[in-house]
Amino acid sequence: MNPTSESPKRSNPSHPSLTRRRYLGGLRPLGPDEWSIWMEHGRKGWYVPLASRDEAVAARTADTLQRQLETQGWDKAGVRLVREFTLSIFWLESPLACTYTTLHTLPGVAPIAALPTTRPLRMRLAVVKSDVVFRKALVHWLEQIPGCSVTGFGSLAELADAPRRSARVDLVLADRDDSTVSADVLPARLKEGGAPLILPFGIYPTSDHIFASFNGVESGYLLRRRALAQLLEPLDGAFASGRLVPDEASRAIRRYCQGMFSPAAGQMDASIRSALTLRERQILTCLQRGLHDKEIAGELGISPLTVHTHLKHIFEKLGAHTRTEAVVKYLEK
Image 1: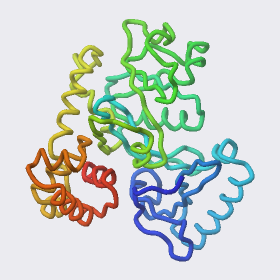
Image 2: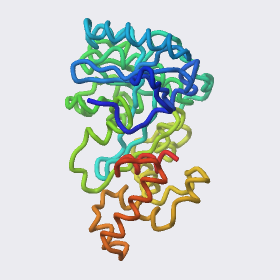
Image 3: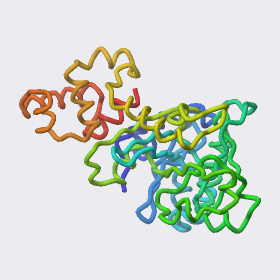
Image 4: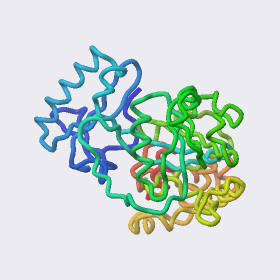
């Protein structure tokens, strides 16, 4: 697995594996000025921040960490290493719709999150995740979202065996790789007062890996990068009297995702918005829906060759190299 097209700010010519990661602002004390390195072992790779602005210091630290990883693997070394990761919440399966944000695991330098910590409680969450390192990070970061409190966490077995970890919740976030999670098998304590909403989540090295983890989504992909505080915003329309109403959730989610299908020009940087033509924005919207070149040509009344020409211009303007990268950058602006 190689670093993907979610490009870093720039690399260090003297140590090509070193990069500066653009989404660390507000998460790490040094922000985007901190050096990171892509580290791989056993077909798994992650960006690891190196806690330094100094290239030489970062390079030495990277060499040391790489040796530790080679001898200990992710199971042991990963407990101590800080890893950047992308958290994605999946709202719909067809089309595949998610919101996602960049976070990091908690060992090492403490996070400097400045989100409000005193706010009225709107939603109680449970996190179903077996991996302790990522579970610890998820509990910490989700509790930084205004109005959210994590009142249950663990694997499904741990939630069932440890009542202190499974107080009544409104929303269950379940690892999408854990196929055992369903409303029928949730511990009874989680369902006191009514069945909670269950949503799958995924943890990825970068946002591009979200695309790579799915195949054959014919109705399209709708991915939107959000700040941590807005990660759960598709549920904003599902509250009554300040509390989550699960029966309203599906309608609120679909309204939100329908808005994602419309051209995202309003969210784009002014310079990018002025650079993209109307036709180029139309083609990007078609790409969001998963249409192929011939289908785009038929829908817009142009030839496939003209579609190819527009795609070339889109790639140049967005600095993208693939269609999926172009859609991700378009939605991130």
